[in-house]
Length: 157
Ligand SMILES: NC(=O)c1ccc[n+]([C@@H]2O[C@H](COP(=O)([O-])OP(=O)(O)OC[C@H]3O[C@@H](n4cnc5c(N)ncnc54)[C@H](OP(=O)(O)O)[C@@H]3O)[C@@H](O)[C@H]2O)c1
Image 1: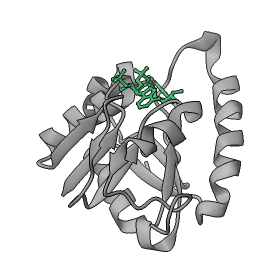
Image 2: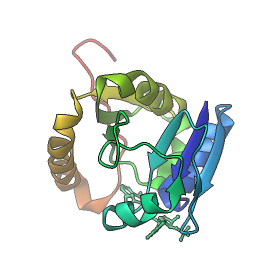
Image 3: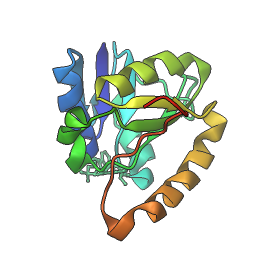
């Protein structure tokens, strides 16, 4: 897959390394912007307050709030500093996502390719709920320590 990541910091840079390892062609863009023409998917990994400015510097882009492309939002508790430990976990940790129907398959594939198990929460209308869930998950972290967690159905593990 041809992936363009807007943001090349802890998250963007970390995901770029994992997806390259999984065989994808990845371009990670910083403040200088760049071209997203030909991308199968564009991943946004900049601070929320910088999203508009960051996307404004990227050409060839179709994002729902700007145009009409299908969008997904995904979140998990594992800080980017733990990305290199995902693969050595006994079971795949979970990563929740909310997505437009047309973005579901590609979202699941990319979550799996960084080592997580995708947990669908529903359509993009659940993105706000996912943001709220994030704070509850943070509250559940003991002593502020980042943890890997697994959303499991009874009998699965
Ligand atoms: N780190 C984590 O574990 C973690 C976990 C959960 C959520 N998040 C969230 O994920 C987002 C990214 O976090 P991060 O740790 O990867 O941040 P980071 O290391 O500071 O990287 C931010 C990236 O955004 C780019 N950027 C910032 N302002 C921009 C602008 N106005 N226009 C274009 N690009 C801009 C920076 O470009 P340059 O490279 O050119 O400086 C950099 O590549 C944040 O919202 C953070 O809260 C992070």
